[in-house]
Length: 297
Image 1 (tube, one colour):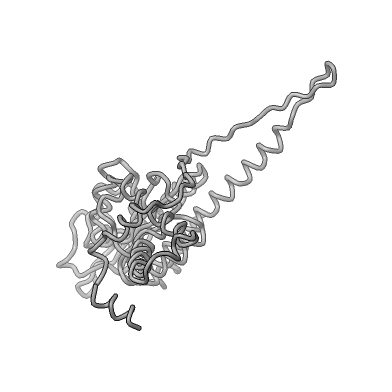
Image 2 (cartoon, one colour):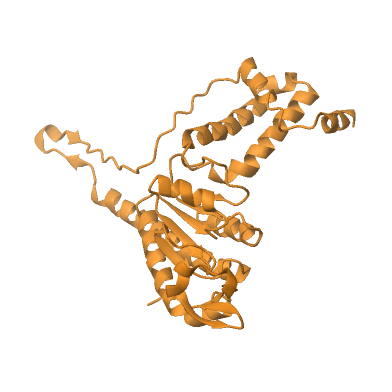
């Protein structure tokens, strides 16, 4: 039984493609017809592709791996942020930081920098800083939060990417392809489907269309997470401490569950003076005249 119905897709405008002159010939298999100079997507094929993608995402989430959602276009930002946050998955909705996948260790350092600033703000050393220094560090923290705040929990490369509009997110697509990371994507008639592992032919411009597809994928991921939780609870129930009859001594069997999550060594060292200096050295963040005005206030 399909997760979405034909009428749902029709009402959301998933079938509307781009103008005929803007089409990509590689999308021909997924085009039903042309009407008034606009290509109409074959929704029967879209339903099949949605089911395939949803099932694959369910299996990935069931294994405990992360799926990274990428949607930086205006009409998709708020939808992705709301839906994906609810299932505790990482997403990029502001700007794709170049090298996010291919240079992942550097991105992790930037995320750790946020944590360092947070620790410093709670420390007594924060009170000893001048107003200008506090303002600079606070602004840097806000900038990092805007770009990287949604991927704080992404401690290792994602198991898959879900992309809205592969044409706009071409850098993310190239990085994922280079690292052989599976790509799930909403692909419109003006986009190239080559290199996309799970194609969902659909209108990637209408907010209703994006909402419907993202909601369906999130439900599939939610189901996978629920199945994983049930399986783990069952394993914990089945594996109980065993008692040895001789001498009444008990032997405890420890069950180790490998979650495929990279452990990050978080040392509780205090922020040193040179770290503060490093934070203040980010001269591309600040406008000195604006800072002077805020200090004067």
